[in-house]
Length: 169
Image 1 (cartoon, rainbow, N blue to C red):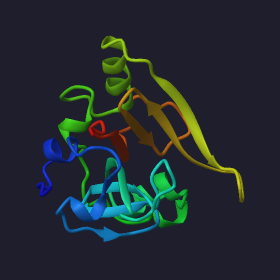
Image 2: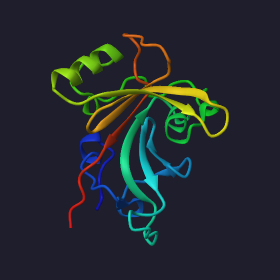
Image 3: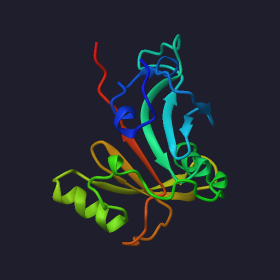
């Protein structure tokens, strides 16, 4: 299976596809993150649901983030990595609930208008120091991450994770 790095194609990759079979060159940033290109990432795991690791790593989601440090903050709780300048400042429209929904207020309003269940939460690094990592708006297929602990209506997401295609047999 060879796909391009276009969001429309990345979103169609079946979940649990072995990374090596996708045909896209990546760089592993951590146990959980493989960079496709600036601002584009695969969320990966080293075994499938049955514990098999023969074809690992497996792709479970795609993600957009302003920088490598931003995605490491989201997926690895590595707050200290999030110091880089943004290389991808605007989220791709394919990952937004609707075109132009570029900030907290617009994303939340759009999701509610569509009748999607939305959960807002804060994520903390509980295991070590309890520090606040980010605020998250979670919807059916995507999660939108914001740096501020406060509700800032005009805050733009610094990262988005998005579920990919369903596995087919």
